[in-house]
Length: 342
Ligand code: SP5
Ligand code: ZN
Image (cartoon, rainbow, N blue to C red; front, side):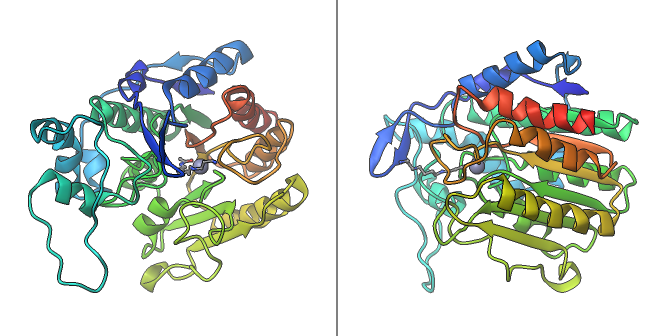
């Protein structure tokens, strides 16, 4: 299968992440994408192509225009304000008050940030736009008849909602791709999120939509980021009631349990019979990942890919998380190889 990749991901190279009360080197770093790219090339998966420039119109189908303006302008405003570090929110409008945001960059950061884990830097906007183009390039290949494509997106996207960034995500690459399938004539699309973390952004974007099935396997949000979403009673609303499904799983989860949840999710996808499938492909469920409490093995990712391949659907894989630099390449590409072998 084709891989879409842009070196512009390197323009996001944050130096800080607020983690456990300390500013540390970010887990979500440029080397992640380079490791995956190296493994794609070694494995002979298929050609690696640069993205086409789709512009912001397909992104505006998913994200709020004022939010996009904010992401485009925040770095310039932050530096103009005299701040010396990377842009990290330090204040939020509290619940249940009459708080109102001003145009000040500090107020805007708190309005649009999910958390303080994601520093904004020079180049973040450009990298995020390149990642959306990468996703759209992969989707275009699938829409044109390829059985599958791999969008090597960085930064990731699944925590980003219509007007919210965080969890290392700015633009929701998978949601933009799913919407472009619909806009291109697909009647229904499914998003299967196998990243260790719940895909709260994607869930929220499609929560009231009947034509997009969103299913997520993830660490129990009582114990894991993003904490506030991903429970089994979140099933959609209005026309979208029943088109969201969550599979929270406990610490120590191995492929025995994880694979059962994947099986249940795949059966739901088959019943839904979508015209296209987007897989939010995070491999942070790996046993040695620094941000997860699952215990998946490198070989398990072959089985994961094979099960998804058995669905027989036109499929776009979009890279999400995975933070063990030693294994992110093998684990990610194993899903794609498993899919192709199915
Ligand atoms: C795309 C994706 O996988 N995003 C994950 C975002 C998680 N961000 C918060 C992680 C919390 C880091 N602190 C834990 C340090 C380990 N001791
Ligand atoms: Zn993750």
